[in-house]
Image 1 (cartoon, rainbow, N blue to C red):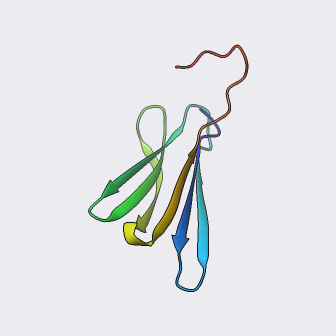
Image 2: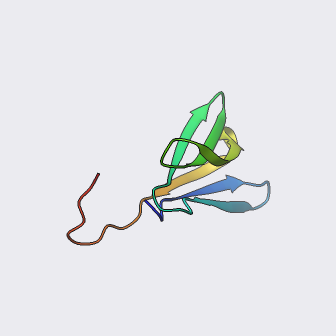
Image 3: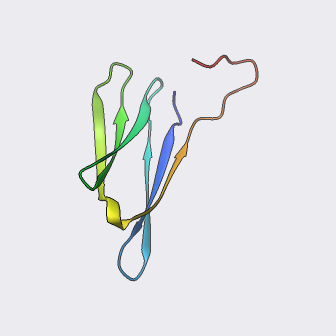
Length: 78
């Protein structure tokens, strides 16, 4: 679904930085995973191919906000 988006807020020492990973094509999605102290946010195609991945140290991540695409009235989920 076009419009899936994840915002990541990271502690950058004396300030914070905000990054955004967006599914840029119709049918794409954004997946998040935490592995070995690393937060991975990946844009994935319909077929499951990873387009791009952003990696952050888990102890530096302050917030991870997942924002799905708003659905239109009458549009079925799934």
